[in-house]
Length: 209
Ligand code: PCA
Image (tube, rainbow, N blue to C red; front, side, top):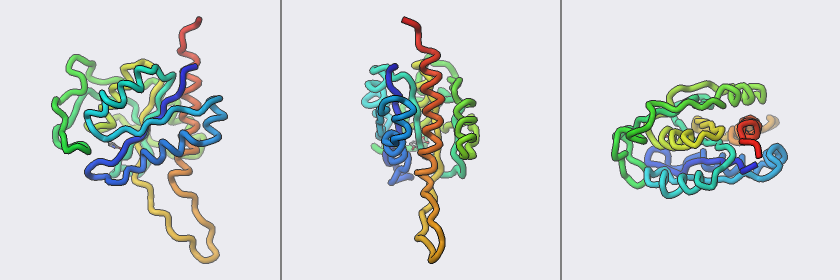
């Protein structure tokens, strides 16, 4: 099977320290994920720049990954969200890490209005079974997360986008109290179950021969 690609994002103007890149690396390095997949996944932390869609994402997709698990931060959300679709819209209001806004109002002028992720519902169920109360979202925004998801969903391989909130700051351990596991660790464990779903779907949809 061709490999799973895990993606995260680097900093952008309103989020100078983007936890999604750290989480993507942490997930990709999990021994448990390696056991699930039978190999280590590929990991790509995209620059949060419109130019990165061609410069970084397109070459990674040209290598024909078997499935793609994408992670980005949505700072105003309170729960992890499974994005069920990407839309063919770009906002011209939010500058990227280069200070550039989208040049057009669409991701792909001749593309469909939206692209659904057939894997999203199963991914959400798997993460909920793993103890993560993930919500379904129909709105991945009009910025780089949505644009990259729209691009990846055009490939036709199993793919899902997971938006994470800003992780709460880990408090110092209190005297006598146990230490809570940091959010990124808990999310990485549940996201490994999302990866399992994508890998299984990838095997099922792979052409014979
Ligand atoms: N979040 C932004 C882009 C990069 C990221 O982590 C978004 O939701 O579009």
